[in-house]
Image 1 (cartoon, rainbow, N blue to C red):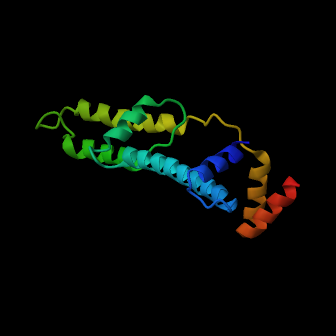
Image 2 (cartoon, rainbow, N blue to C red):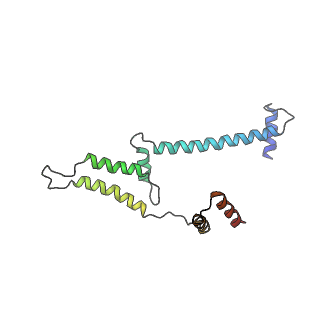
Image 3 (cartoon, rainbow, N blue to C red):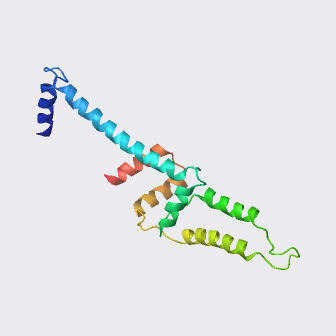
Length: 157
C-alpha cells in the first residue's frame, strides 16, 4: 500500500520513467541503505569523539564517571593516569624522605580501586550455554570458522 502510493507519487513527479516499476523499489532500497549507513556513521563518529585524545580524553572521562555497573574501560587512559601521577608527584613529602606523599598515594589508590571495581563487576546478561559449549568443543577440536558455522547451523535446525 505504501509502496504503491510512493510509486504513484514518484511517477507523478517524473523522477522515473512511467513504464518502469523496478526503479522506484531500487530507489527506496538505496535510500534506506543510505539512511542506515548515515545512522551508523553518526554512531561511529560519536564513538570516535568519545575516545579521541583531544582534551586529554575529557569526553571519555566524563562519560566513564557517569556510568555505573559493568563497563569496558580503555586501559590505556587509566595507565596514562597512573604514569602521570607517578611522574608528576614526588614519592616523599619532604626532602629528608621521612614522610610519604599521601596525595600521590591517594590518587594512585583511587585509579587502581576503580579498575579493581570494574574487574569485579559482572555483566548484567546471561551467557548462552549452547554457544559457549559449541565454542569450547570447536576450540578443543581445532576446527576452523567454516566448521563452527556448519555445526551452529546444524544445532539450530
